Amino acid sequence: MNHDTVWQILLNTVLPGNFVLAMFLGMCPFLGVSQKLSTAFPMGLATAFVIMVASLSAYFLNILLVHFHLEFLSVITFITVIAGAVQLVEMFVKKYFPVLFRALGIYLPLITTNCAVLGVALFQTARQYDFVQSVAYSAGGGAGFTLALILMAGLRERLQLADVPQLVQGAALSLMLGGLLSLAFMGFAGIGGGE
Amino acid sequence: MSTPEKKAPSNMDELLDGLWKQNPIFVMVLGMCPTLAVTVSAINSISMGLATTFVLAASCLLVSLLRNAIPKEVRIASFIVIIATFVTVVDYAIQAISLDLYEALGAYIKLIVANCILLGRAEAHAAKTPPIPATLNAFGMGIGFTIGLLAIGGVREILGAGKLFGISLFGPHFQPWVVMVLPPGGFFVLACWLIVFAWFKQNKANKSKPQQGCHTTPTTEGSRA
Image 1 (cartoon, rainbow over the protein chains, first blue to last red):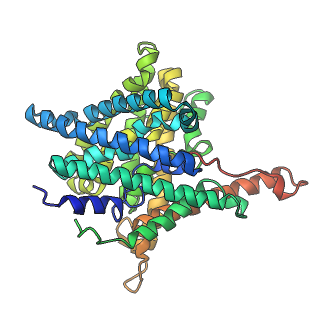
Image 2: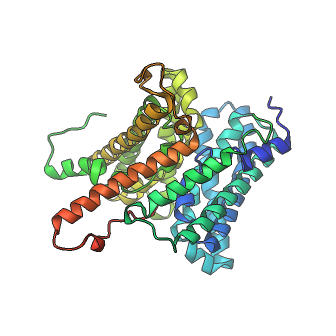
Image 3: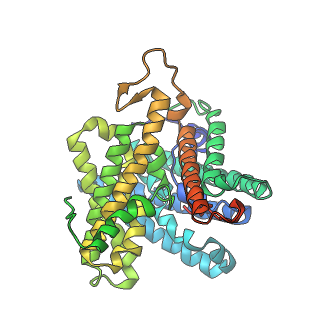
């Protein structure tokens, strides 16, 4: 049904259609965990991994749901699978990277309620991507999310030394930065050959 | 969703909590994805806000009723399934009521599941409170969320399209600020609202203790999301 090539999808989701900066998916970690580069990067990777797992499971789940005419259960099944995948990542990080586990804190289990993860599953179903396209979409989405998080963390590290008016500090400043980044990413529009 | 207004003052407090003191958007900075994504116009904002309010109130009621039946270990998973059920209901209801609206909001209706406000309320409040105050609190939060969305959506529609609720405001010679209806506009408008709120708070703090200099009042918003 959908004829986008793999490269188109990949480019589109990383740059002009960036999950965070163009589609507003995954705003919570984008604003919450982007204070330091050292936590932003692993958080990006963990989320990218969950996005990948969620996308793959959503693809097969969707085949199953369509086969049994149970499409109305899609939201419930997707979110349950995602919650399971997040639990897996959490246990893995806790065992092998305990320092990182403490640094990420509450935001690690919150990947479950990361819109980017559920968003991938829903959008790929809505656009009727086939298997290869779904993989490209989720890989691009994860990479784009990591990229946005890293850029944001870099900017915020610099700004810690800047003299910012007291009123603007905190969330407002992060949102301003997000807006500027988003404006910059609009410059990539059309690079993936459009929709 | 009728709320009994003539309850004990404590219930009234529960209801009003989310409107101002703990407004989910401007004070807690939660649920940013739909906040920024669907607030291109005022009408989209209201429908999104009402849909979220319904899901919030209904799921908090159910969570609160079941709070003694759900084992502690699987509570998050149970909450999510409850929330997802009501989101599915809303999704199909909107599809039946208005197909245009359904297409305008797109997958963001289903993404209500992943809204931090819902799980946050269920976990932090509804799981510990009896049904009536829990529902009132959730309803207040939902209305507060709707007001926040409307504040952002209204500004974006007025500046970005020169309209409000589809009615043209400035006549045909108005040059719309297209950037406002594009993604960056969402970031900028929300940032400006946060600054306005921080300013109000600082003024209030300065008035309450006029002898001290304004530098001693820590009024920064916590940067949590």
